[in-house]
Image 1 (cartoon, rainbow, N blue to C red):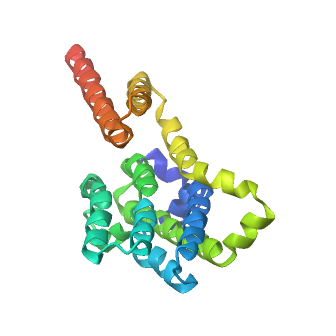
Image 2 (image 1 turned 90 degrees about the horizontal axis):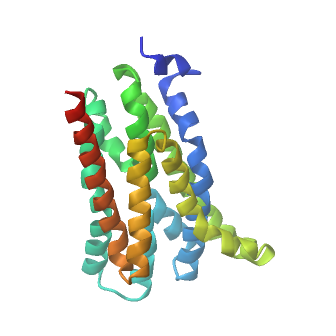
Length: 240
């Protein structure tokens, strides 16, 4: 029997919720920041909440609000939002082998975010087939609802919160980087992943310092991927 299944404290979807709970520490602050910015940009509270409920696109929502507020044409807003979310073209196919026994996973991909993808990619292979769709449903729905709740908090009470506790303005920008950091650290459990993540981080910083901020992240990711597969292939050849 798969040992991962023995850790369930209930049904698979409850385990998915439990595993995704740490993500709320990043989701809610970032969503709160979006809610505040959206209202300040001229959107109503209801419109702001609906954006998070039906677009649910993280960074793309900030771009969407900024472009609409600046009067950008709708076609350009749509194209830019789709371009930023193009990474999901890779996310879905990477998870489909673990979920394609149940076609309900197709509409559930709406709940796929960067953080849910990272968590699911690490957790799903350890679960028995019959538990995977339930686990993913619990994790994805929790992420979606927490994003909506954080957005509502920022839209309805953001101004009051920042006036009462000005330090919040300084903390909110670090919520998302901190969330990704929490997801990355557990991966540094062997030399292969440690070197890959280390090279990617160093490459991103160097490119940023050299004056290429827009290219830093994608180029650093490419460097990390090349190193990962080079070391993995070298290790496989030695094992023959």
